[in-house]
Length: 226
Image 1: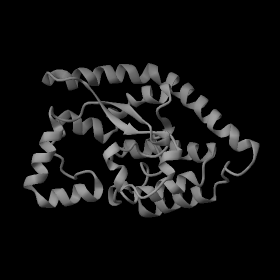
Image 2: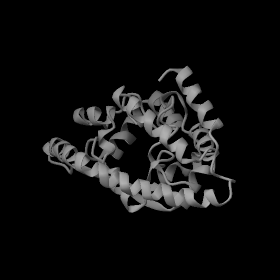
Image 3: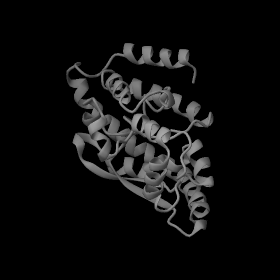
Image 4: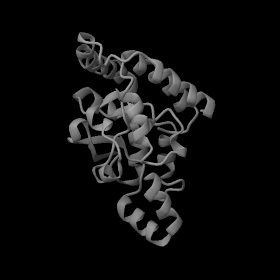
């Protein structure tokens, strides 16, 4: 996505009338959004399940589990377990620790962005799954049970909380997609994610969510990963 497209998207979101502060309509937004999340998760299941099944078989050919779960912070700071297709080698945490100890530049990149341009933990099939965000399809289960929403902030690890300078995240359910996910996230620091969360929180509406959902396939098909 170009800088002009990203700025245009931000402008549209800023000018979208928010349901916050509009009386009784605001009280309906969470309930309507939750109902739509459940309906969407159920509707997408017939397509997602076979695809996840095929990918799980490919991932498990190295002898390790096809799925991966890890704690994330949800609404009100409550922890939940997020589900993904495994895209990393076994003992990925130890691999990362060793890699960062040996490469100061990589450690500086990790400390700033909480991600690496060249991540030694990611498997060959994992790179493909991440490129098109297929690894995140199991999160439809998280959406269905209420841990997450289709649209919201990027799920945050508990140990990242101290580095997050905002509060908007904790009033919202994390999302499979969101404003940060469809924007120039590869150029932003982890701390700058709070700006995207604040912008989204200030424009909460079904129309805002719909616009973000419309933009998501463009990001996925470009193969930049979510």
